[in-house]
Length: 395
Image 1 (spheres, rainbow, N blue to C red):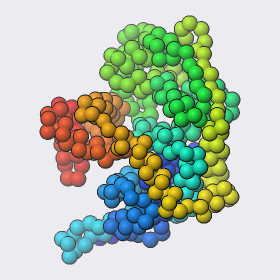
Image 2: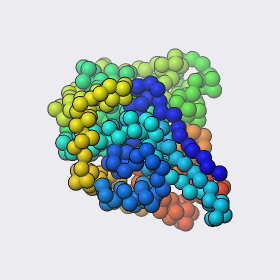
Image 3: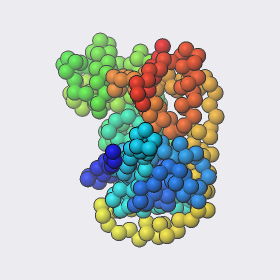
Image 4: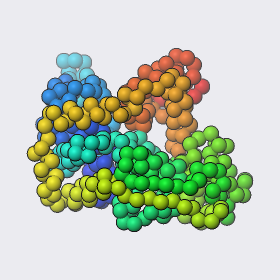
């Protein structure tokens, strides 16, 4: 039995940008697209050998996770599955670039690696990790924020209204961009409880339109706001025991749908955001990438493809390794706290227990697998396996 899996590549520009930025936000994925994969189906051992010509890290099993969980799902890579009778029907998988991968993936990935080298910063530091829930991911949201700031949106309230992001999520992104000197950001008291409150206006929480496929989270936030009458997002998050950013996003959704209203406390919220030189360079990168994804020829991108060398890719992969979560040591307590928090959020947002692949995508680090095993062994988590699928939950 032969089977080829090829997901469709998005048609709309914003959806293409969302997909491609999630594929090039880490150097190993970019190297796979720009230099390793091509139009020929290749097995993982062959892909691993080709990858070693361009970089020395990570291991082949991590490369396989990148390909299957990131590149295949967005339509840049096709997968072929072949049943081998001589091996009792065992399935052998191989991968190649899709037509979209050849047309857009190679150029976008090479452009990202060369830009990262020139600006002396990893795309992971700029755009964040892909493991965010919802219709859009952190790299795309970061790109939208940079473009809005470039267009003159210099207030947090304006950015939030334009993007629909929650307060805490927007704050984290702005602080990350400020830390890496893409923007200059000053804000007054945005994370203090009471800076703004939401008031329930009307309706039944059960009938509220679901926010981005997260029925449990939507209904729970609505029920708490209805019961309290007036509340801020930090107070609701504390009652639910989850991160504030997720609550802020739902409260904004309830406001837009007419079920709640925002009550600003202490006058207007003061913030000051300015785009710095490095930020301007990344805004130009985003505009060039949009031109590429619209089918246009971009000379700077063609030049980047020609400039790619093994020395440059090794440098960028090593730089990513040094700044990524895999290189930064977490204590056992820190791992446990982050995993428990993620399980709570995932269940509220989806109504389901997270699977192994969900942890790998969210933490963007293969080490999380070992931590899950330890937490099961110590009785903190329970594990259920059916066939090739494994779920985890709190005990």
